[in-house]
Length: 241
Image 1 (tube, rainbow, N blue to C red):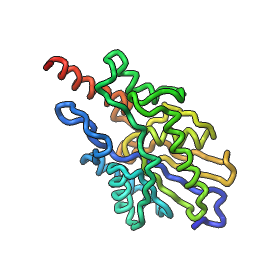
Image 2: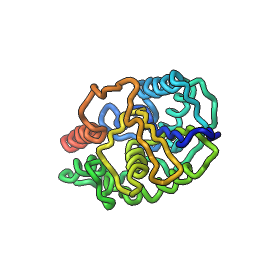
Image 3: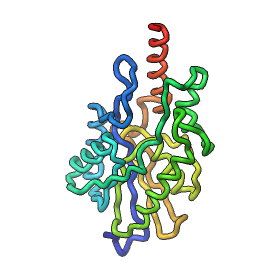
Image 4: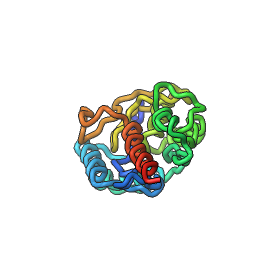
């Protein structure tokens, strides 16, 4: 329940833990079936331990229904020593790509990284699939409904890199404008305080990865790394053909 002395409520937004989107030979795995790998499970456990250490308890937990977010939410709760229902809101599922095989070689890199590059035009399509405008059309009502529910004081949403960028961008600006440069590491934690007024939003934490707090492991974005993996697969197939 909402604390009567609290002017704002705390919303935690996490990305799911690490997953393996491509097989060893480079073949893509269906994104709606992929599950956490060993590193992703460790990351989710570490996030849960962080919440436990801080004494944070959730009044509401929401995942997107995809296996990687449901598993992350479950592991976070277990490591935090909490037992609670994980609600599902499929409107918060990741931005959907198209058929990679249909993307021309010359357009491949832009298809991977363009949707998360700078202030993104709403017409930009992710991997030839869903556009940024279409993403906002489904995630904004979801987050507004959650915010309108006054029965919680601390909520946790476990979603995806693209969705999290959209949510944070929208909550901070009040506009359906994607700030693509808001990096989202696997199992990262974002924290926002939400006031009564629509514009009363305070960003407290952004992209905190408990197992890599200084983000020292890489300077590539997630989509740059995935582009390189898929490119190797496409090149191998081209040679075999």
